[in-house]
Amino acid sequence: MPVTTIPRDAVIDWYTRNRARSAALFDMVSDQAYYERPILLRHPLVFYEGHLPGFSFNTLVKRGLGGASIDPRLETLFARGIDPHEAQADRSLPSWPSRAEVRAFAAEADRRVIAALERDDVERPGHPLLDRAEAVYAILEHEAMHQETLLYMWHRLPLDQKRRPAGYTPRVDGTPPPREWIEVPPGRAALGTNARAVVFSWDNERPETSVDVNAFDIERHDVTNAGYLEFVEAGGYRDARWWRPEDWAWVEREQVSHPLFWEREGEAWFWRGMFDRLPLPLAWPVYVSWAEAAAFARWRGVRLPTEAEFQRAAFGTPDGPERRHPWGDAAPSASHGVFDFSSWDPEPAGTHPAGRSAWGVDDLVGNGWKWTSSVFAPFEGFTPIPSYPEYSADFFDGDHFVMKGASPATARELLRPTFRNWFRPRYPYVYATFRCVRDRGARA
Image (cartoon, rainbow, N blue to C red):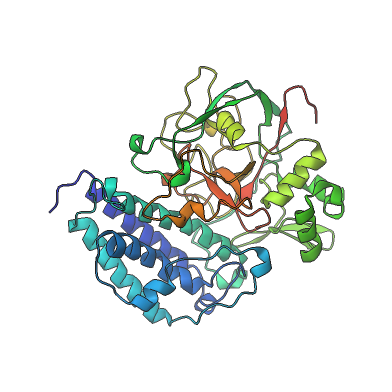
């Protein structure tokens, strides 16, 4: 067996846990949904059952190690997903293979990936894909990220096409916390990392950089459904003043009148949960697109935080050194927040005080990604990651915004300060919430 420094047993365990979770997610949905396309901006479900093992095989075994093909047609078909503009939602898609064919391909891909992790030289200094076992960690995090985006599609399926896990009940207790501002003093915020200082990072997390951040106030809690309801009832979706022109055009074209996760019946509001249609839980964080979050902030006379301000609020300390997590260096646990698939829905804002930041700000990691005002862009000195060169570079187009933190469906392996997520501003399916900031001295 080749000499290696990576913990083979640990990465094999991670890979098999990933695959088991993905299988469990697919087992949640009925057979009739397999070729459905619940989000028109994405492929149907069948694609993802082939894509997850296919990407791992293509990246590590085929490209990294030069291994032989399984089925060139399926390897190409399942190579990459799509991220179209909303105007391309009706684009044509390929014909798809049978589920038996997909699963046979997946099983063989898994067999070859695990064999490579067990026996092959997957860590080669200087190799474009295998230096520091880059391709290994890329495929592990890739699947973990996709498990969350799978749930965005699962969420849009009819309730009768999903199987509720035994014993699951959404947590709807509690009342909305009061609106409260927390002062964050000026300081430095670290936005990147040194690739050699960590086991793995994506290219958009590099290189290490830091910026000065002026003093600002940030809301202690995410904007709740109760808070956002004020905007809806005040006619926010009928007033172009609060929207960028391109976002207002979307509101008018799609007749958007409330968050996608809300439904109205008569005068009553409901939340479309993963397995339930619930009376709107007023204490839950609101899930909205960037366009809706930004419009709300303008209506309130405040703004969304920059990526650097989020970083300062989440990981900064009065003493100077930044923390590994908002709550400190302790490993993430269920007491710190709603993440790592601990819930199929959000939970009431402010119910995880153990996860507070050094400034006393709640839920900065967990219960929903946090929109920022920062356009997704490279840090100075950016270099594409060889194992997945299009991962970030294809989205540096000025039409994606940075999200930070984590949602209920974000794997614990992604809970690091430098991790960046991003989506288009009018993509409403994400488990993303927000909170507002204001410059010191301003009032809202």
